[in-house]
Length: 292
Length: 336
Image 1 (tube, helix red, strand yellow):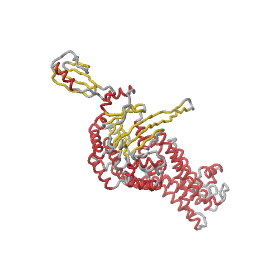
Image 2 (cartoon, rainbow over the protein chains, first blue to last red):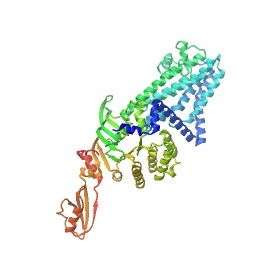
Image 3 (cartoon, rainbow over the protein chains, first blue to last red):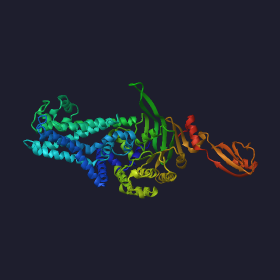
Image 4 (cartoon, chains in turn yellow, cyan):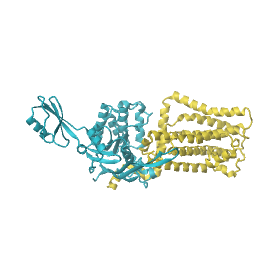
C-alpha cells in the first residue's frame, strides 16, 4: 500500500493539525465549543420574548429556595450557629459555581438518550472531540437567570458578613467560585461517563450536582458528621464552599482538619477534573468497542 | 490494485451480549456480527453493499468510519488506520484524522442540527472540518444547484420533509471534499422523484470528482442504477462480491422472453435453452438463463412460430437475492 503517497496527498490543514498533536485537537475542540455555543445563543436570541421569559423563570425557580431560607430566618436568628449573611454566603457560592458549571456543560446529561437513539454516532463522525460537541449541545443561555440570582445573593452576603477583609480573603472569593465550577464540571463529566454504562445514570449525576448544590447551601453544622465526612473525602464537594468559606469566616472546621486544608480547593478541583477526564476517555473507548 | 482506498482484511466483530437467565443470573453470550471480512475498494468505485436486516451492514459501515473498533483484523481507509493508538490525539487520533477524509450519510438519522436553519448547519460543518473558503463556496454552490437546496437554506432542519432533509444531509457530507462517501440507506422512505434526484446527484459526484461511494440499501433499483459492483453480506459473511450480472447467475436468475403469436397455440417447445412457463391466449412466456443471449432464442422461435411481437423481461433481482440469502451456499466470487 502506497502509504507515503496518500499521506503527502493529505490536505495541508490536516498535516498542520497533526503536527500540533494532541494540543491541536484540544484547541480545535475548544474552538468548536465556542462556535457551537455562539450558534445556539444566536438561535435562542431569535425569539427574544421567549428567551426573556425563560431567563426570568430560571431566576424565579432558583430564587424560591432562597425565599425558603429567609422564611426560616424569620423564626430563628442562627442556623447551625450561622447567621443569615453567613448562610447567604454559602448559598451564593454554591449556587454561582453550580449554575456556571450547568451553563457550561449541563447538556452532558443528554448523552444517555443520545446513546439510546443512536445520534451519538453522528457526533463521532465529525473531526472534533465528542466531548466538546456534547458540552455545547443546546447551550442553555436561560441559565443566566439562575447565575444572576446566585451572584446577587453572594454580593449581598459579602457586603454583610462580618469578615476582616484582607488581600488574601478578597482573592479567596473568585478562587472559590472557579474551584467550585471546576469541581461541578468534573462531576458532570464523570456522570456523563457513567451514562455509557447505565443510560439512566443522569439521575444519579443529578443527585450529586443539583442535590449537592442544595446541600452546600446550608452550613455543614446542620448535617450529620458522617455526611460531612463523605462530602469532604469521598465526593469532595465540600471544597466548593464549606471548607474555604469556613476559613474566610474564621470559623473552626467541623472535622478538625488542619487549617491549610482550606487552600487545597484548586488542587482538589484539578485532581477531580483529571479523574473525570480519565473516566470519560475510558468510557468512550469502551463504547467504541461494544457499540452500546 | 495499486490505489485501494478501502482495505479490509480478516475483519471480525464480536459483541458480548448479556442475556437474562433466571431472576438474577445473567449469561454472557458472544454474538458474531461480522466475521472474516475481506475486500478492497479502489478509488472511484461505486459499490453496493446489500444484505438482509441484521446481516452486518451497519456494523461494517461503523467500523469503516472508525466509530466501532473491530475485534480482529486490519482495516485502512484512505491510508489511515482509524484505530491506530500511536496517532496524535490518543485513542481517538485515527478516528478524528479519518473523519476529515470521509463523508457519511445515514438515511435513518440526520447529521444536521435539528433546530438550526440548514445554512447554519453548513457553516458549522465548514468550521469543524476547516474547509478552505473557496472550496466551501464552490462545493456549496454546486450542491445547492444540483440538489435544489436554495429554497431550503433558511428553514430549520426539523421543518424539512424527509426527501429535503436527505438532500440536505448529502450536501453536508460533501462540503469538505471527502474521498469516500458512505451512504447507509440513502433512499429509504423517499418518493420516486426524490429518489431519482438523489441517484442522479450521486452518479455525478462519482463521475466528476471521482469520489468513492459505498452504499447500503434495500432498494435494488439503487444498485441497478448506480453500482457496477455489488457485495452481498449474510450472517456476517460476504457471500458475493462481483458485478450485477454475475449476481444474477449466482442466484440462478432467469430472464423471460414474452412472445405474442398471431393465434392461440400449444406451448412452444423444442427451443434449446428455454422452457415455456406460462401460456395465456396467444401470449407465451419462455424462461432462459440470465447470462444466455436472447438473439438465437428469438431467431429459433421466429423461424417456427407466427411471431407478432416480443419483449424481454430482466430477472427480478429481489427474487435472486432472496434465493441467495436463503441458500447461503453461493460460493464467494473473488473480489475485484
